Length: 285
Image 1: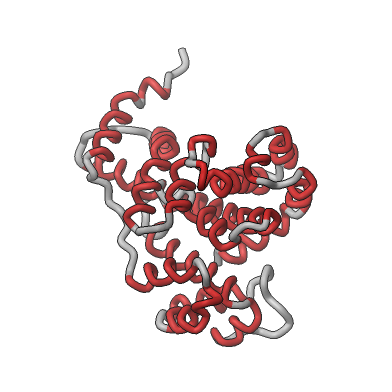
Image 2: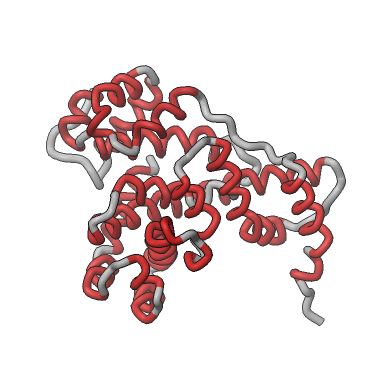
């Protein structure tokens, strides 16, 4: 007789829900440089010098920016050796994306017991962000806002995994790795909202964390961007698996109408799947 995984998770689910409701989650604490970066990221052109100065203060951040700049996805003929040359090649907006990605990955998705899961979640987040950015551009919306929403849409998963480890350590639950993943998938949206709220991120980012799986649940004023994140999330999954048929299934769904992307634009994105994957891999260095 097959095991009913959902039934087996009934008690751990209830305990985890109580843990979340009691505000016992460990929310990642961002350093001041990360908070400043997230605040100015929305309009980096206005803060180009400030952003460059902020990046310059963190040598590991400078190193990450230079490495990404020299990756196959972004590299040119000339090797980049400094932040100033990187800015000249990529521009401050792309540099801002790389910097935000570096900070979030280092503070949230590293040094974790679930190393492979964290790597997979982060890889998917970066790809989702790049696709969301392009969809927003096609739709004439704020590209940087869409990028940030895509990058952080699954930010709750590390905290859920951390909560599960804490509950296991206290002997309160006993679950298999597969069951841990199932619980993380179930609870990460509401936890992501809590993380985004704790970081004082804009409402649209919070709603993307909470409702990207079902944009119809999002408030009207954020529904379009949340729909874009949903589309980007789905395309990212398909692009990683090289499953163009699954990607094309979006053409028959109402979410692309809400997102405001045309059939032709969506097909063009699917045709560029390999390019998106390559660029995401370059940023993951």
